[in-house]
Amino acid sequence: DMTNTTVGGNPRHSVAVNIDTIHSAYADLDFLILEGGTNDADLVGQFVGDTPPTKFGTWTESDFSGNYDKTTFCGGVEYLFYKALSYYPHSKIGFIIAMEMGTNNATVANRKRYFDEIVKIAKKWHIPVLNLWENALADARLTAFYDSTKTSSENVTAKSFYYDGQHPTSYGYDKMQLMIEAWIETL
Image 1 (cartoon, rainbow, N blue to C red):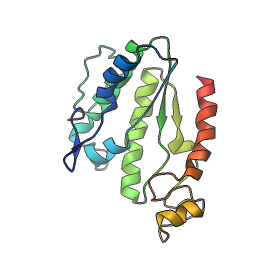
Image 2 (image 1 turned 180 degrees about the vertical axis):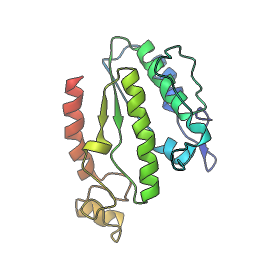
Image 3 (image 1 turned 90 degrees about the vertical axis):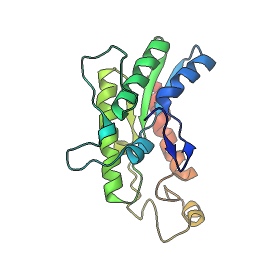
């Protein structure tokens, strides 16, 4: 259930659920920048060939009803976009796809499948996307960006992009910050 997901007994947040909380705290926004999908790809399940996992769900290009199955990944994304546009019709809304992360080829490929679907759903809703996965030019599988033989601290000192193959170092964030700022200006 995408609205009540736990990992090791600890609840995981859901942006599709938290959009209501965000709106109650901030009824008016100039910008609403959303991001997500990595944990979904890891928790919902692995694609097997062209077959998505059961909880991946589906979506329809012409359905703008707001009646989405939040227990699925696609339904959760649809709900998030529907609610964001309903709550903030005069705000600048955008979605950021995280940079490529992970060192396992199957995990990386699976995450990309989820992100590709977010891009398609965002297009349906006319929500601009900054696709760092495609454009940040970082790949934790390459030693130029992450050296798995070094400790996290050594990767930070060496100004690697990732400190653990997944999360950016301050150097990595500095590089992405420039792209994010430039993109926000286009909204």
